[in-house]
Length: 409
Image 1 (cartoon, one colour):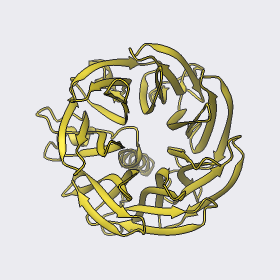
Image 2 (cartoon, rainbow, N blue to C red; image 1 turned 60 degrees about the horizontal axis):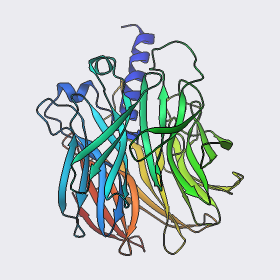
Image 3 (tube, rainbow, N blue to C red; image 1 turned 120 degrees about the vertical axis):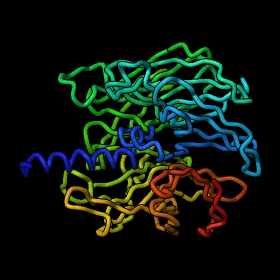
Image 4 (cartoon, rainbow, N blue to C red; image 1 turned 30 degrees about the vertical axis):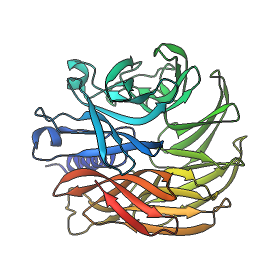
C-alpha cells in the first residue's frame, strides 16, 4: 500500500478514537460497535443533584439492534436506581445534559439523534430537546436542524423556558460556507416553542459546549475554528455582548464554566506541540473577569493527552475540576495506530489558581471523568471505565481532602 495512503488511513483511525473518547456532547457510536455487538457501553455524560437525588443522562447499547440509545436515569439518596428511560427513537441517540424544572416537576434533557434513515446512513444527527415527567415518562420533544450535523450540549431552566447551547455545522465531506451555522444558543418556552436563536462561528466547526447565567447575563463556552476556544457573553434576550478567543486548545475547545461570584473559570485542554493529532496537550483552567478579560491560567502537565472536562466552585470557594490524562501505551500501539491509556483526574485550586490537590483515578484499562457535583460534603463524579473492551458508567465519590471514598456503577 502506498505510504501516503497508509498515513491518511492512520490519521482517520486515530481521529475516530479521539472523538469517541473526548466528545462530551455525545458518545460516538461508529461502525465498530455496530459490527461488534458483543461490545457494550453505558455512559453518563452529565448529571445534577436535586433534593438529594441524582438525575443523569447519557446513552447505552442495551438493545437488540445494537444502536446507541439516549437514556435518562434517576437515583435515590442512597445512589440506587429508581428508574431509567430510554429515548427510544429508531436509530442512534445520546443525551448530553439534563436539568430539573422544579416548577413543572419534570426533567428536560438535551442531546442529539439520527432523525431518519438518511441521517443514519450519512452518519449525521439532529439536535433535540426532550421533556420527561417525575416518573421518567416521555412527554414531548423538539428537533433542531440547520446545516446537517447538529447537537445540543447543555441546558439551563429559566422562569419562562429553557436556554440551550450546541451546534449545527456541515458534515465533514460537505463543501461550501454558510453564515447560518456554527455554535448556537437558543431559548425555548415551556411548550418547547422557539423564542429566539443566535449563532456564532463557522459552518464547519463552531460549537458551544456549556453555559451558565450570572447577574442577568448568559455566558457560554466552546470553540470557534479548530483549536480556538471561545467564551461568549449574551444578554437574557440573546443579544451578543462580546466573545473572546483562546489559542490554542484541542479540537473541542472549552467544555466547562463556573463562577465564584467574583470571576469566571473555564476549563479545557491546551495544545503543547504543533501536531495534527493533539498527542501532547495539557489540562487547562483559565480565569476571566465578567467583562471577559483573561486574568490568569493554569495547566496540569502530564506525559501525553491531558484535559479538564468540567469545573465547579465548591462551598469553600475552591475551584474543583475533573477530566482525564492519557499516556502513550507502547505495548498496545502499532505501526498503524497510536494507543493511549487513560486515568480519571480530579484537581482543586484556590481562586488565584494555586494548586491545592491533584489525584488520578484508574482501576481498569481506561477511566474517564465527565462531570462533578458537590453533594453531602463530598464530590460526586460521573464517568466510565473500560472492561474487556466495553465502556461502563460509574459514580466515583471523593472526600474534600481528595481521598477516594467509594465507587458505584
